[in-house]
Image 1 (cartoon, protein in one colour):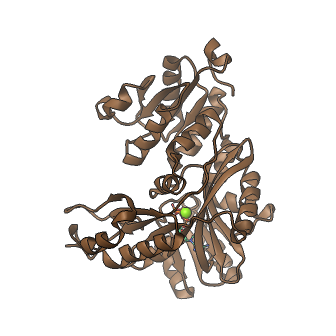
Image 2 (tube, helix red, strand yellow; image 1 turned 60 degrees about the vertical axis):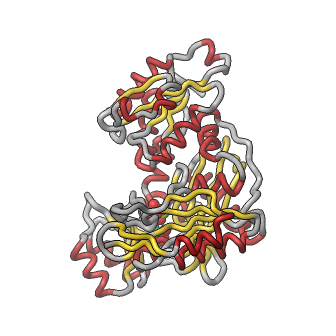
Image 3 (cartoon, rainbow, N blue to C red; image 1 turned 120 degrees about the vertical axis):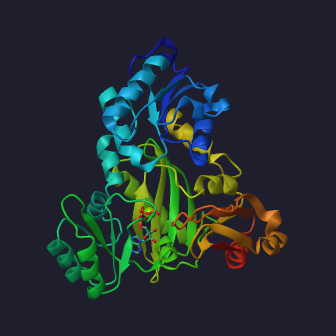
Length: 420
Ligand SMILES: Nc1ncnc2c1ncn2[C@@H]1O[C@H](COP(=O)(O)OP(=O)(O)OP(=O)(O)O)[C@@H](O)[C@H]1O
Ligand SMILES: [Mg+2]
């Protein structure tokens, strides 16, 4: 990899200098930062919006440099900060960050500084979902019909062609925010009146796919797939958001190397190759339609959110936070074998207000406590997130998939988070 200001240590391949971009220090972000700090032969700098006082002591003590920036999502500010970090490190070989919105600005900074890693064109393929689906279509990868509409007439033309139901979403959204299923012409006209698509705020419209939604999380090194995992969403995030009483769950079956997943393994490899990724951990979402065929929904060139990296770590008895850091900074990965099934149940407040009480947790604890590996229970007074991840989670694992699936169902049916 080419870096600026290469030193002899680096030329000899002894030391790699990496800049980690983390606008804020969320719990998960800190896990990735600590993982990067644990790698041998890496000197790490941190770029953040946070003041130095907010850096946990164990992290601060191991950093090669720290640079505060006012806006890490703006490539000009980010470049300034990365240059300062690189000066303190004596150069930079890798620029990394786990957040979705950072992927394009980081690629722009890599381009100006001549640092290897995901390029601007490739980052755009991942960030712009309309462009991503164009790439998929021209590569013959199964996906929903789609159109990006910048005005009402274009949106109506898509609905005429594709029919209902359809899905509307922002072309660069996340967390399923502003993503809606529209079932008929009247609801569509209401939507167009309320959130009219324009050149400034285009809408991505998609054929609605009916089926089971899954993820396909995988690692590529030098364009070769080296590891993957499949999870199943119970039910789809969109269904969860449309139905306030549903608490979401995700199941990572123990068995992934099975014929049932042959089609997604093949399509995912083609999709990542068509998008142009060379190395990285990606989080793909896909459907199995009721007729058995598959469709890729989208893919992000970053680790998954919603505690998935913990789930992946549990299912493989390995540290996938560190795995991601190794891929991104050292361009290498030792693929761990799947040893367990794992799953997460997301606890979601019911009603209005803030968290008032959690019911049923004692009853569940008696049945599944041996399976629980990590939990974050909602706390009294907590404001609801409004998202499908809810207010807390319980992560379970066991060698048998059926046991994990039963535990998840028990948790989401017995535990009730009361808002008031
Ligand atoms: N074409 C489609 N057909 C059926 N359901 C869809 C379709 N597109 C999106 N969805 C549903 O809406 C959810 C959110 O859509 P999408 O993943 O594109 O948005 P997102 O904002 O990236 O969400 P996230 O950050 O949760 O992945 C999906 O997980 C899926 O349940
Ligand atoms: Mg998604």
